[in-house]
Image (cartoon, rainbow, N blue to C red; front, side, top):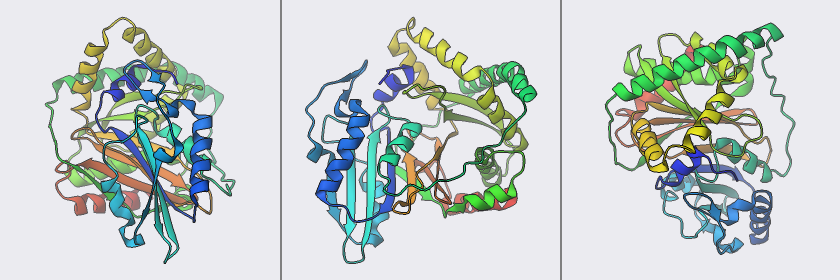
Length: 367
């Protein structure tokens, strides 16, 4: 597991975790042991404990990494709140198996510190839980070779200007410090097949990001500039990466162009390599303070994952715990469902019911 600047920053954040959950079938203790063993064999650094510079060896016992809880299925969702607690092992992750034998309802929660994994890694870990994976046609939108060249040249330039605007507005914006407990909005699922039938010449990711933009517009009744960060991945790197985006909510059509720039330009590898170079020169405590300065001024974090497709895994969700006043749009597709949870600190969204209604209105207007 490589340790880059983002992973080091995340290691300093208390309780900055990713919580994943899904409804499943009956597992025995032996089954849970086998699953954890498979996960750790594929990702050996999960047996270690995160430190400022690396993952160091620590005592590891499989039986310490999971907990079985018996409860009524009506209470399953309450564990979204109660699992948000300090880890009791040196390994900063744990699996919880919630059982309702009477109604034959079962759920798995997997909680992990963000320093171990970003959303992409979580999606890979979820695949290990599959019993009967189904083949799903992603049907990615394709563009011409000429357009790829266009994005490589002009897209790279445009994204650098976008990032400069992002940094300028980060500097100008006053922070809103919120120290309340975590709250969330769990949305009704959207159908992936319906979205695919409705969109033309844009990707599903473009559509889902547009829901965030449109929701903000409807909720605030203002066409404004927002500051957002999103995770990204390029090549076969195994570490956390984040990039900032400066977006005006007055035009959701811009989203498609922005994401094509990210997909096909050279901005991501250049930006990542530049940051790696700078972190070898600048002392880490300065990097950490600068990162905290920016994170305390964000409006949104957006993360969209392609999750497992398995008949034994239903209601798949994940959420990232926010650090301050930002609203986190956590989106994952599984089977034919698009599941969205918005996580935030209490007070970041003044009217939860209205914000959720704005998400559904945004979806309907875009579909």
